[in-house]
Length: 115
Image (cartoon, rainbow, N blue to C red; front, side):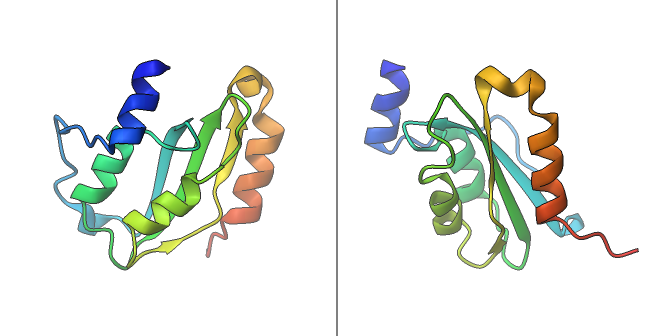
């Protein structure tokens, strides 16, 4: 946790080993991250900063140890200024095995599927 805090404070953006080559194939993108010191993890920030998500719908979600969404949704919005960013879902790590009802509710409240 000391290393995570240091990376967040220093604004570290690690280089990613791979890229999504054809982002044009996707209209909706779910972005998952652990909540690290009230924000998204540096590798997730690197992904968002290195991919053009203009015109996409971005749906963030986090796992956490008690901090909920904190600033995670705001950080995704900052890194995706030309995207529509939906309300994020936050799921407590200690309850992840029993999180199904919360996950189902979040998905149902967040996503509308046009048939």
